[in-house]
Length: 233
Image 1: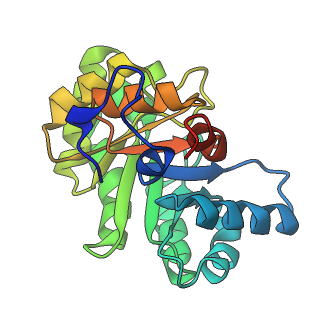
Image 2: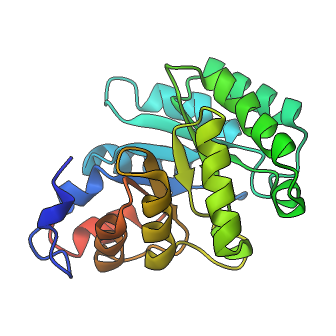
């Protein structure tokens, strides 16, 4: 990790390799074939991204392809709607961990949050966080574009209270993605040490640096190679 306090407004003090270590390189399309996934993993190794983020069906293949590289395998549970039963999310997470996943990005029960049913929200998050335990990272997608500021605060507190490790802004599939304003707001809510992942619509080196400046400790993006190439890294 590098010191985000040294980031210039346009990231001009950084190398692409610096930002690369923040990136969860993401491929969540439904039409991906095996050969594309292999190339994707090889790109992750080339650029030394922190992790790849893929759908559950690809976890085992990525785990084998990335063995020995040091790159983490991240996958998703209850994606993209968060409307699966908590038991289904927990089962999905557990299955993925058995197949080699290091990190699980789950989507909250958004309807329950907006209903003010915080017991259900926390129980849902905890079902996956407990499966992850202390050896796996649990990131919780709260879908900021669907929430008011007060709901974002409530969601952040639920994530922290349920034992997860990160608040993640977005799936990128609900009509909006990460914004600098939301990332800064989440960072101010969760404090300096808790994980914050910005995802959705981050396509340039400048935007990635802006998210890091705002407080992101991880960046989810499908444009990882483009981002690092923009500054020659």
